[in-house]
Amino acid sequence: MYLKPGASNPYQQYRQNQVVTASPYQLLLMLFDGALRFVRQAGEALERRDNSGANNYLGRAQKIVAELMSSLDFRQGRLPEDLYKIYEYMHRRLVEANVRKSREPLEEVEGMLLELRESWAEAGRRGGNARGRHPETSLSSRGG
Image 1 (cartoon, rainbow, N blue to C red):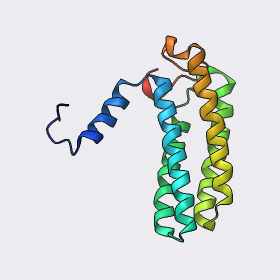
Image 2 (spheres, helix red, strand yellow):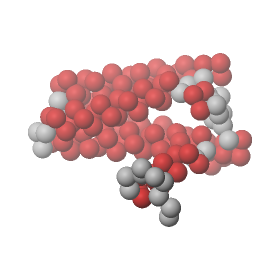
Image 3 (spheres, rainbow, N blue to C red):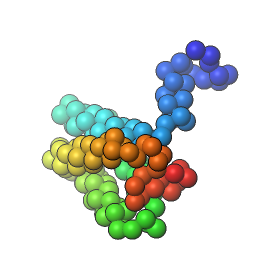
């Protein structure tokens, strides 16, 4: 593998290449995977009473949920509006988990993220990848 000048390590370059070459569905699934990873890590940090670590992971999960909110194309009908409300709720619950240092909101958000991720994965398997865009939502910030 050729390392670009200034690249810090091969794994980082590999991940960057994955993002650059990913379809809109793959990008969306990567976001969900990242949010799930950070929510789980936040829960583990809370169990260890590592409030600083929990704050870090929750902040990262919140940023991903905010990106999901900002990527919706509201010209595509009602689905993006409904998804926005779900993402907004998840964001509020993540903030609540951080303020209260509570796992309960994290468990709820994790379940919601898993369900949404599976729904998008199924949509991609059913033909979304062939069109290269999200049905009804289009990733507006990606030009999808």
